[in-house]
Structure formats: C-alpha cells, structure tokens
Length: 384
Length: 216
Image (tube, rainbow over all chains, first blue to last red; front, side, top):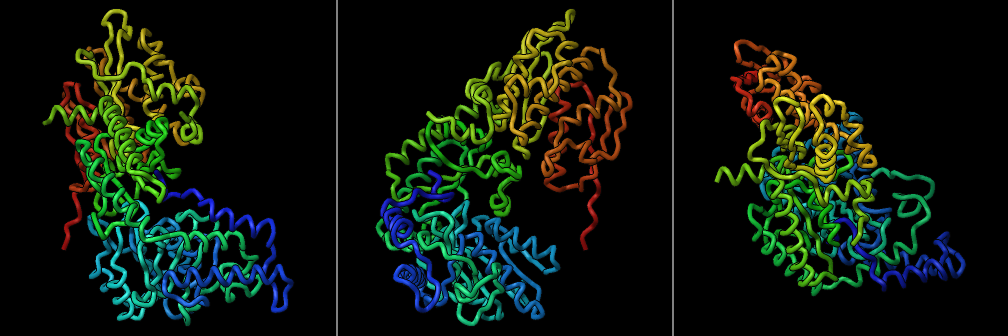
C-alpha cells in the first residue's frame, strides 16, 4: 500500500506500449517521414492532446520529459537561468518534494536568492507569507498535493497573489495529477509538472506544462524537439503508455479511493496514541493516509509490516538513505519523535476495503509489539 | 512471507531473525544498574538493565528495551547474548565490530547502531562501578557517559559534536556547560537526555546552556 511511491502498470497500458516497442517503433523525424515515423508522430501528438485536455491547456504547451524530477528541474532551473538579469529570487514552500528543494539549494549555491515558505500545522502554505515574500521574485513553486501528508494547497489563491505580484507560478502536481482536477487557465499556473508512474503508467515519463510566452532555458540540448525545450529521442512507448493511463482514469475510482482513505484513517486512529498528519476531507489527496504512532520508530514498523506482506512508507530518518527525518513532518511542527513514528499508506484504484482492514490490523499488532519493548512506552505507562 | 525489504536494506538473515525474535528483551525490575543511551530525536535509543555479581563481577542477567530501527533491536539483542555470563573485564573486550560480525555484518548506514549498543554496555559498567565505589567520579567518567548522548541533528555524540564546552566535578556535584542556546527545543531535548544518561547515579547534576541573545 505504497502507491504514492509508485504504482503497478495497468495491463491495458502495457498492451499499448508493446505495440510501440515491437511494431510501431519509429520516432518522429521530419515532415516527410516514413510510415513508421508518421505513426510515432501521431501517437506523440495524440498523447500531447490527452495531457493538455486533462489540465485545460493547449497541446503546444506540453513538453514530455523523463518524469516529475526532470519536469521540476526544467521549470525551476530553466526559468531561473533564463533572463537572470531580471531577477535572481526563487521561492518555494518548505514541504516541496526533494527534487524541488534540492534544485533550490543548487540555485542558492549558484548565487540565486532562494526563500522557503512556512506552512501551518496541516501543511497549508501561509498566503500572507506568500504575499509578503514574493516581491521581486521570478518564480514561486508550490506543489498541488503533498507527497507525504496529502495536503492540497489552495492553488487559486496562490495563483492570484502571483498574478498580482507578476511572478511566474510553478506547480508540482505529480501526486495529484488526474486524482484532483486542475485547470491551469483558471488557476493562473505558468508551469505544471506531472508524471506517469503514479497513475499506473510506466516509469521514466512525465510532462511539463509551459504556458505560451514562458521560455525556460532547456536542460538538454541537441535538437529542436519538444518546441526546443527538451532535446533527445522521445520515449514513444512511454508517452503512449502515459496517455493511455490518463485515459483510463475515471471519477469513480477517485471517489472509491477517498472512501478507502477515510476508512483507513478511522481505523488507524483507533490505535492508542496515534495522530493524523495533514488535513481531513476535501482538502486531502484522495489516496493519502499518514498517521504517527507515538513511542515507536517507523523503520522497525515497516520491517515488521513487510514481513507480514504489507508495504508502506515512513518519515523516519532510519529509513532514509541520508538518515534525515521527514522535512514535511518537521515543517508542520512535528517533533523528531513524531516524524520517526510517521507511517504513510497510499491505496490505489485496485485496493479493496478488506485490504484496508487487514493493513490496519497488521499495523495495530506491529505497533503494539514494538511499544511493549520501547522504553518510551513504559515511561508513558508510568506517567499516566 | 518475503524478506525482500529487509534484504534490500542489506540486512542479513541473522539481523532479521534477531529483530523478529529479540533475546533478553524487556524491563528488569531488580537490575543493579541501568543505562540509557541514544536519543528519541535520532530515533535511536536503548535502555539497558544489568545484574552484576558483586564478588565475581559476572553479568548474571542482562536485558534491554529499544526505541529504534531493526538494526538497533538486532544489535542490542546480539550484544546481550555475547556478554551474558561474562565478567565485566571479558565483556569489555566485545567491540562494536564483534557485535556486527556476529550478526553477519551490518549495512554501512547502520554500523552506528552496534556502536550505540556497545556504548550502552560501557555506560552501565561505569555507572555500576561508581555505585559500588570502585570508580571515582571525575571528568573522564562524565565524558564517557556523555558519549552516549547524541546530538539529534547530526546523530553523533555530543562530545564529538563539540557541544560540551566545559565539565566541572566537585564534591559529588557535576556541572556541564553546553554550547546550545538556552530555551530552545534542542537544549531541552539534550538536557533531558543527559539527565537520563546519569539516572541511577547518586550525583547532583546541573546542565547549563548559553544564554540566548536578547531579542529586540
């Protein structure tokens, strides 16, 4: 139950990809290409339309990339490095994905003026803070849904501030794409990152919406593909699969995931000394559950759960390669202990209610088992 | 059942086995000495309980409680197995490397767990010796105990992190000066961990922090 990390590819997507790998394996070259080249050109432009339609953009505003990380880099680095003389200030929220935060760190080392926005206890960006701090900025980058605690930002309000202050607005919508509706026109977004592998599409494919008139500097050079913004042979099977995955999404599955999410939250909060991280209801991503269990450390929880066949995720430092605790839980005011004990579950369209019940039973058992041997749990029992 | 995740982490089957079925786990009511090392903030904490025979100095019984990852639990479990029944002198020859090797090795990022479990043993022995009047409370003792207190941000002990500015020991009173700003979350966490580390010793402890620069 770790579908915010990645998802299983839908068999129908695999079918489409097979076709473009085994039979129609050409790549678009020029205006008068062979039949195979034409077929690939058709599927590429068709996919562009599918993505564009989903976010109410024009197909010429969609640039295919290798995924969310590259889309974020192209948007942020690309805008920062273009017209550098017009300003060097770049702003993002503190709870962005590391591909955004590390890009900002890199820009900071390169002499840019970077600023991170605070969030409240549920992870919402402080709008007054945005208003106060974006003067003179080139770009503001705020995600749609948070990758750990599912907070859905009020993009419209942030877009309004950006418009008022004449700042470009980039949104990392990798987690929310197709799960929550997004209209780049209405919201006033200039750049939007999306990815394929979280919606049962293949890994290694994503896209960046670049509004007409916005000209980020390309990261990759060598040809004029993707409107001159991304050189390299396009990943035709991947792009075809991505478009198919978008086609397969329907409102019903999203509604079902909301139900599973709320069921999981209710069941997990029945475990003693637990706490929900992030908001409830409409302002939370449809498939995100994040609960902190006090007195236990997440890696040990994960390991026991994995041995029982349940795959989940944690914000504990012990689980991260950098041995750093979740920056998201810390940013919403959580203590180190609350971050170490935070557990994320993310159901998919294939998850069942029965699986939610058994997942919460497993977690209940594991947490209880670890608390029995935790010196902290004993301290608690003694103190109450 | 799959060991996939644990294996991907680089844990040996023996680490997984000790994690799932830890030996010598749980509180010991009649322990002669306890030692708490690590920190909640680091997600790495061990409380050790030891019974030591006054005459033979043999470890009659040993147990631990853990707040930490699989490696924390497995290394503590193995450490207690390795030293049980040994004399203090023999047990001191068990190094963190011995513990890691006995488990068939540890992933690089988890080696600090075996260091911490070894540290808990050191702290317990020293505290026992102080309790029995076999060891003088001096700066060296205080420093050694502080080796078991971690800087939550860097994950290294506060001596290595150069957070300890001064130690004064006089008439059973210990004064520790830290380079941490007074009133911060960090100062509170570390002070609590230091007090826990000296718990059970009949000593009067005072921790001083830097006075914060007055805000305008």
